[in-house]
Amino acid sequence: MKLNHKIIFKVSVILIAILVALLVGAVMILATGESVFKTYSIIISMPFSNFRTFSEVLVRMIPLTIIALGICVSSRCGINNIGAEGQMAMGIIATTAVAFALSSFPRVIAIPIAILVGAIAGGIWGFIPGILKAKLDVSELLSTVMLNYAAAQFYAFMIRVPLIDPNEKTGTPMSARLPESTVLHKLFKGAAVHQGIILALVLALVVYILLWKTSWGYKMRASGASQRAAKYGGINVSRYLIIAMIISGACAGMAGSVELMGNQGRAMEGITGGYGFSGIVVALFGGLHPAGIIPAAFFFGILLYAQVNLQILTSVPPNLVEALQGLIILIIVAVQMIISNKYLEEKFRKKFFSRKEA
Image 1 (spheres, helix red, strand yellow):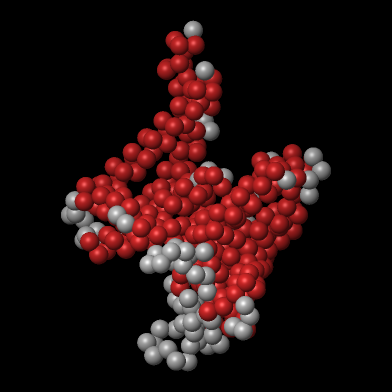
Image 2 (cartoon, one colour):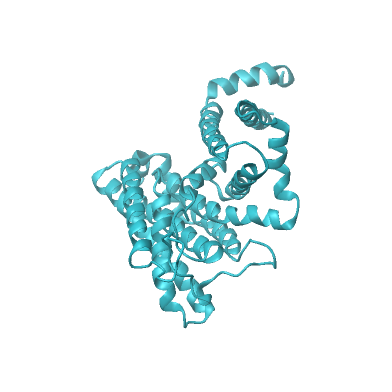
């Protein structure tokens, strides 16, 4: 019975949190003068109306999943990576630069190399705040945010000067289209989802094995649970902080490569689409576990696709979806605080289970 009351307590808190999110979202929708029922119907039903719209959700789910898996690794090790947006941008630039050199290579060689280069670039960008934290105790929140800004400026320069497409007449800075040898093909005709989803699912399995089935993963999680205890246990905490940030950055860089090669086809402004920040929310919403991250990424893929549909089909501003994401972050933090509160859990047990246990 002890296990039952804990599960019911956690599920009850989560359901209440979801209800609160829906109610607050309804108030926000009403403030725009739009129908709450119509808006929620579009958000929920549109992705499942046909396979094409469903695949639009899946294609948004891919970078969210890959980034969130990286955030899972760093967070489990006790270091917060807020720099995924910049790491993703660096992965895109590196992949774009090397892709043209791989134009004559067969796809089976060119694609892995291009993705690997993107992962390395993101990993290097993650290594910087990792070593600053491990060796100099510099706040990773500060260093990753600053590196996001640096990456954004570097990205803007690269697509305007060395990588700009000289044949582009629209005036929008962007690179030339990637050569066919580095393009991830669509899985189905007429659908947006591409081969990157296979990589995302395989990576989820790899991260699970790394964190829960290897000594490295155990030491990372031990460092995240208590650095002092981990040090007393002989674990080199600094080393694993750096490794965790390299892996986290590499995942973000890989997400950039996959988004570039499978969806966009060229480097351009706004290609990261806020995925770096949304990936943090997905990781938290998924409980920092690969099994939770996959459905959480799908849910946020629905929200991101809804952003497009709401703009077309209603008068609700697309920023409403971003507001809902912010609301979900607050709810996640509140839920985690409540679930971890032993006093509230005990009061819940006494109120609803004391008689049954007696």
